[in-house]
Image (cartoon, rainbow, N blue to C red; front, side):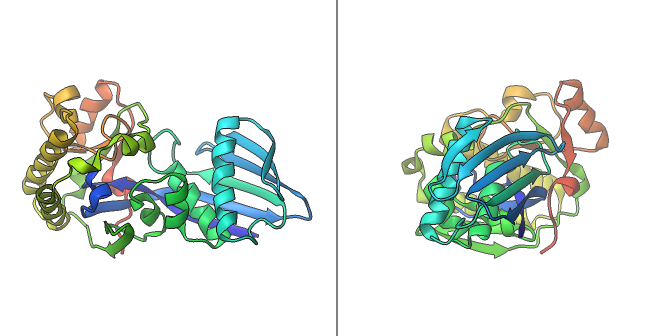
Amino acid sequence: MASLYSHGKVLLTSEYVVLAGAKALALPCTKGQSLHYEAQESKTLRWESYDWKNYLWFEVHFECSTLKIIQTSDPTVAKRLQQILQVARSENNLFLSQGGVVKTHLEFDRHWGLGSSSTLLVNIANWAEVNAFSLGEKTFGGSGYDIACGSAKGPIFYTRVNEFPKIIPVEFTPPFADELFFVYLNQKKNSQQAVQAFEVSKVTPSLITSLNTLTDAIATCKELKEFEAYLIQHEQLIGKLIGQKPIKEKLFNEYKGVIKSLGAWGGDFVLATGNEAAKSYFKEKGYTTVIPYREMCLDRI
């Protein structure tokens, strides 16, 4: 029997440029994903994945010795999972020497971009007793900040140093947290594709220095107006780098508060500043998933 759990993730600063070694402020979510494995005297592995409404959205049967797919409800998802299990076994040849049943449960909508893949990967790595960053690098790629958030107990500074993760717990407890909230843009962005399309060679040392300075300032800021000014600077830097207008200019130009993109620009969640009444602005425009900061993010260290 194995019971594992990992947290979802939000990348607050240095999106894209974290791939080039910039310091990022990353926030594990209060919600995540669990994995329960029950060993059986069997030559097959039955896998069941349940969403946040406890609906069985995916299932697959594997032959344990070869990890061959016997049958599945979704061949594309099954092949992706098969790849992860194969890499895990290549790093620990004792992994899955016995069959059984796996059940995973997501605590958030899998279309939200909060880490349905990274939480699964961290759980599988811990179950297989292999390095989660190595498993992630050989399957999904990316900077690895989402892997770090999976096991974190609170906010972290995350940096890739010579391809190795550097993780430092940080006390990020903004006194204006009640004036921060997350808005879902009603479309999921494929972060893996965004990472692959990003040209790391465009990143200059001066840009990394600027983002590192902003990350430190955002993490320690105690005044909302100052915090908002840093977010605007950050949006301008990343927008110029990737050749896109900030999301506020594109969709919410008349909004009184500040809006910052998170992760891969153009989908998933944005961070917004404003009071309780400001949330109705987004709902009236059809963006009905609005989550207060304190409900979304872990704040302990």
